[in-house]
Length: 95
Image (cartoon, rainbow, N blue to C red; front, side):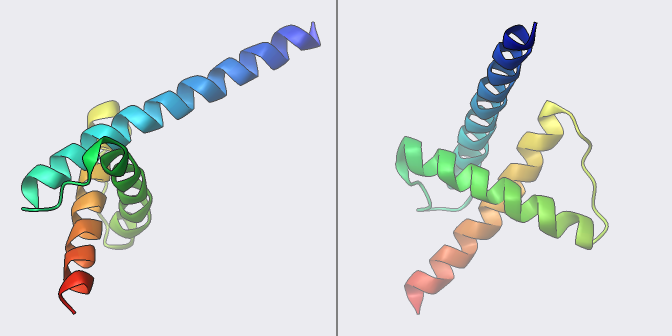
């Protein structure tokens, strides 16, 4: 019985990681299209989107903004965070 539960848990973790990668890729791509010259390739966009999701997940509630908990809300939140990260990176590159 416990092996079935362990297998189901590992499947849930793999699905969650896959969803993070998909949302991160979409959010990174959106951010790279909005911020000119911000594209970082496929892997870079995925990483950017995941970092953006963390940044926006921390920052947006601090300013009282909530976009919901669905897939679209997650993508928009991650894209906003990725845009913020791209803008900060472009400022650092200029300095």
